[in-house]
Structure formats: C-alpha cells, structure tokens
Amino acid sequence: MLRIALSILLLMFTALSSAEDGEEETAPPVPSARYIHLEPAIVVNYGSSGRMKYLRTEVSLKVTSGEAAAMVSQHKPYIRNNLVLLMSAQESETMNTSQGRESLRKVCLDEVRALMTKLEGNPAIDDLYFSNFVVQN
Image (cartoon, rainbow, N blue to C red; front, side, top):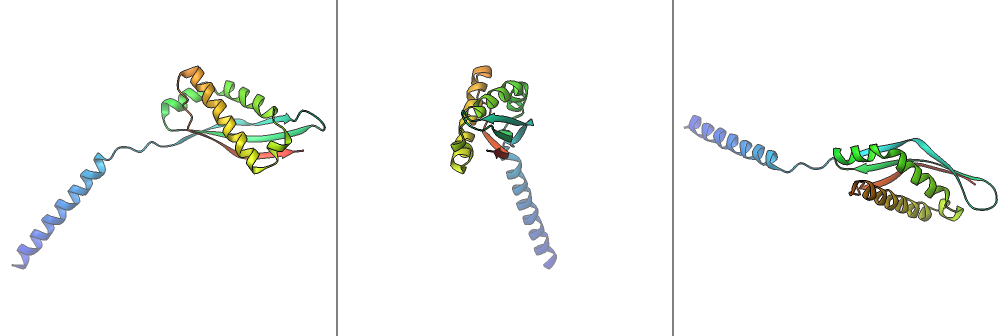
C-alpha cells in the first residue's frame, strides 16, 4: 500500500515539474539591454564669456536589440560630433547643477534620437547616460 502511495506521489511530482518546465519555455524572451560606450571620453570647452571652462564626460547609449546596436555603432562619429557641438554650446548654469546636468542629459538623448531617426528612420536608442561628468570652471 505504501509503495502504491509513493508511486502516485512520484507521478504527481513529475507531472507538476513537467508543467512548470513547459511554462518557462513558452514565456516570451525579455529584451536584453546593451550599452554602447562612446570612446574616448568627450572633452569640450564651453561657455560664451569669461574664463575658459572645460567638460569631460563619458557617454553610454542604451539599446535593446542587436540591430539597434549595429545602427548606432555605424553612426558613432556623427553622434559624437553632434554631442560635442551641443555640449560646447552650454553655459555654466547648466553644467554646475544636478538639475542642469539632468536637463542636458535629456537634451542629448533627444538630439541623438532625432539624429538616428533622420539617418535610419528609427530612434533606436532607449536612453543616454553620463558615466562620468567632470567640469572645470
């Protein structure tokens, strides 16, 4: 009797385990984030008057597909150029506050997305991050 009960429990456990395995296999794949680092670091002088001011920042672009990564990598020089021009046009008020830097990050993201849309018909970039941000006033 005990042997039959154990056999039934074993069969039930095996059936439950197989059902759980099947659920995992049918779950849709989650897109994995990829980060494209613009190297070397971007170094610009900024400000329109007074003493020379410098910014050194490292920029990373987040994409979620291999296709987007390939598109962005192909246009890295153009993206760097536009970011250099954009950052060098900033004033000290933007660079020296956390709100200003966040605003600059969003403006840079919008600029890069617009550029990719113009070149590829797809914004391709999910987000932009400053992994380093050093200013000298």
